[in-house]
Length: 283
Figure (cartoon, rainbow, N blue to C red):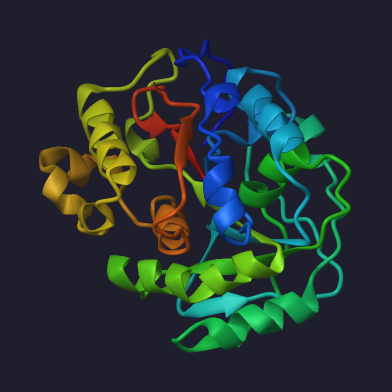
C-alpha cells in the first residue's frame, strides 16, 4: 500500500457520549475493556487526522491497563504464535512511505509472564515465537493511545489456518485476562481490499458500506454468530477482503467480550472506496 493524503469523511465521535452504567460496574468486578481498532494507513501513526485524533482521545479516557495483548493483522502465520520476549523490537512492515514513519520508535517492554499465561489459556496449539516484534498494526495505534510506551505489550498472531469460529473461540479463551488488567486489542480493518483502493475517493463503495453496516448492526445486536458467519452479508462479503488477516482480529475481540459489556462505535467511516476504519470499544 502506497502513501497518499486524502480528505477523511467521518461521522462525529461518540466516545464522549458513550453509556456509563455505574450500577452495572458496581455489581461486578470491573473488567479491562476490549478494543478493536480499524488502523488503516501506517501514516496514522504520524499524521493528525480525525482517526488518529480519536485514538488520542480514547487513550486519555481509558484506565491504564497492566499489560496489552495486541492481535495485529500484520502477524499472519500458519498456526497460532505468541511472543514472550522481554524486549520488543520494532517491525517496519510497510513500503514506500516517508522516512519519518521508519524513524518511529515505540519502546514498550514485553510481558513474558502474561504471554505465557495467555498461551496456557488458549485451547488450541500455540507456539512461542520471538522472531517477530511490534508491527505497525500495533505501534501505529499504541503510540497514539499510550504515547509514553511504558505499558508492557505482547503480540498474538492471527492464525491463517483457523476458521472464523476458531478465531472467535481463541478470543473466548483469552477473556479471563480481562480480570487481570490486560487490555485485549485487535488491530485490523472490517473492510480491507487494497486491490480496490481509490485514492481520490473520500467515502466507501456501496458494497464496502453494505458490509461494514452488516457487521456493525450485528455487533451492536450481539449477534456474533452472524459476524462469524460473515458471508451471510451477501455479495458484499466477497469483496470486503481477499484474505482474513484484517477481519479476523475483530473475531478475537468479540470472543473476549461478555454479555454485560456495552459497545461503543467510533471512527465510523469507510474511506478510499475499500477500507473501513470502523472501530469498537467494549467495556
